[in-house]
Image (spheres, helix red, strand yellow):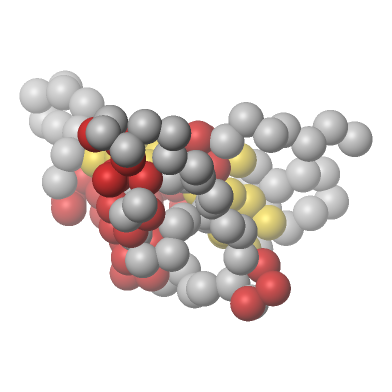
Length: 120
């Protein structure tokens, strides 16, 4: 998403549906403000629909800013058996990340942050 002056105001990354599937993914989205966010989300969902997705999914940490934004954009929580847990072990209690890791609601974790590609 670009401003009239040509500056980048936001972006969205999508994963297209696999051949014969109808589920696409909003993998990542970041924007400078609410208007750019709305535009990037609209572009992401519009593109997924254009390529044949019937459903768009995304991953978010429960209670996080990203989850709130997804819900505001029409996404709904998954079934209770489709939740993923992030488990962390603090090794250095004095490190600034020690307190951050204990507040997952402050995290901005999306599918773009994973590196567990599934190969078939």
